[in-house]
Length: 287
Image 1 (cartoon, one colour):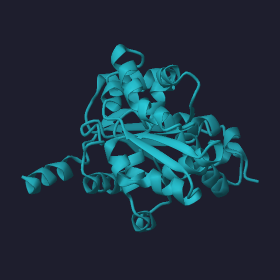
Image 2 (cartoon, one colour):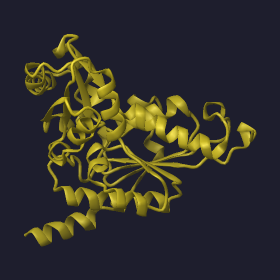
Image 3 (cartoon, rainbow, N blue to C red):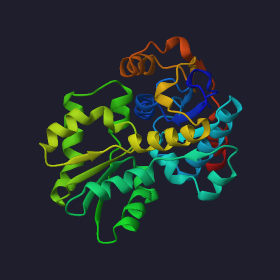
């Protein structure tokens, strides 16, 4: 076995539209606290939820190329809609292995649901992609899937709101049809949503089990890295480098990201608006 203090760890490239991907970042660090992370938050284009699926796909492909160019040796797509729109061919054509969120979340939801009635709360784009509905039905054809678009959540979370009246009202609105359908399990179909877990649990009053796909994505990536290194990543003691790239500077991102990760991230941030040209060309062609 390779000595753990000499391991050449592969940097993990990770991306989301904003702060939501930090839920994946946090899960990764639980299992491998010293793995280098290169994180891209597309704060200029947040939220992704109302954007055309093909535009989101182009953002994702461009972001993967960007992170690989910065040194990433494996990609964790910390964004559900990006995970949903990339094709198998897209992933196979990438220069490095690419891991997503949907399959792990769907499998665990099927495993924990007692009655086969599963809710999915997600952005409108993820719901319209049908990714979770397909993956859950593939694993349990008899399941009932109630997928609810939640457009109010990401703006509230990016603004730093967690338990305000607006948050509670939105939670009540989006959980109502899921509870009415008799669901006992809900999948977070957006990496932002675990930030609202306390509010969602309060509104559901213990009637729902919430599944966070971020945990299963992190495990997939850690297992891949462990296979490369031949050692337990939790015992790695080498230097760790974390870099955070944003497409637009955001004080809220810095404040809430630092609070969530427990470190001051301001010095780690560089601004590189890599997807702006794509969105501008898209608007020109659409106009």
